[in-house]
Image (cartoon, rainbow, N blue to C red; front, side):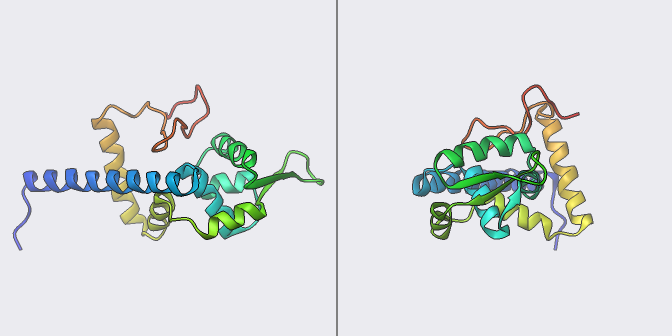
Length: 168
């Protein structure tokens, strides 16, 4: 098999980027249409459903998000009575989150979330495979001069960093 040219590789990379955006965009619209939730909100519910009651900090770690971001997501889910937060009686600083009956019913009939698929896929890779993707995306954000942009979720105004905090 012939070694691909730079032109062929650039074309294939561009097509793959388009495919990723297409899938994430379509899944975000489907989730919102079917559930009224954003992708990050449904992702949080799915993680809680899979793991059971979690500390907010544990949920943030499992979603690879900043705890402040997760608190905002949980605020909206709690308003819809899909999750409940309980402060630990042993340590008042610790807050645990679990699904309500309504949250459990909703999660049973919802589509998969792109963020969940990507996370699980990345977690299954070896360190050398992860390093290739890590360096590739790092380079791509530098090409786009986007290293100082806060990472926003698709289809929402939410970002994954507290206001005023930037990636170093």
